[in-house]
Length: 353
Image (cartoon, rainbow, N blue to C red):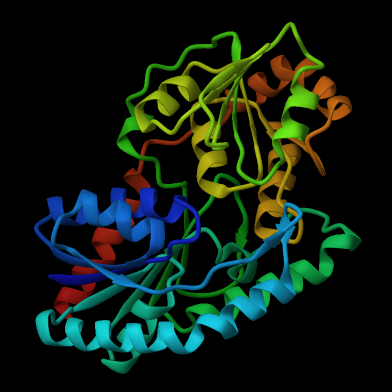
């Protein structure tokens, strides 16, 4: 079967998890063509030479470590005409060179619109749909309610009326809409095969906090060793080791960490949970999906949900690591078996039709 797979470029989570599914589809004999933007395109084009087509996608604008709604709106207005013209050209190129039988979208609009224009079956595989298609079992803070309504509205109208929705999630949620299946997070092979030990360091991935905040906070815990990724630095500063990007090095440091400090990004948190690593999560402001992930981390007893990176909360977190580890031992996941089995079953049904 010929499959078109759409991947957005906001962050690297979509790209890394989509690679796992694409690898699986190719191993089953399917021919896959990818449309992706920005970092996801660069990553997937390198992973699957000749199979990826670049498109232009949507991005958030940030100000003072939080999502800027006005900035995002202006960014869209500024780039809309140019991006639409570029995508129109790429659409025509795709139509000329590839005739898909099925479209899969990881919360990506180009592939969704392409499917609707050509009346193709479309499958959604992402974590975002949990906001619209499932009942959330958390108390939403008053300050987050407008962010929740906005996020839910975007999710509802981003890829509507798909033939089926596979929702990846590290927490359980009651499904309230038809054509929906809840599955465990997509875990890349490198994480599944990593040697897991409880080391003495704490790994942190951070791009939104200032260097000053990170140093001031972590220096207050001289007895701890922190490995910090994401800040484009390669240096030692007292008890902090700033490390440059290295996928192999990062996975090794994550698998051997005693705990994790991060925002609320789904992919990183899911990998930490899979490896049974306690999580200190401080979501980017005004990103409800990150807030939701952090809230569930705390609800399940897997870590602490905080509003910021600060010494008081970090002290409580460090004192509770043993309790978080006991709770994480209850988490069970058999790789990507559940998703792959359900996906292959659905693809076979489409073949018959």
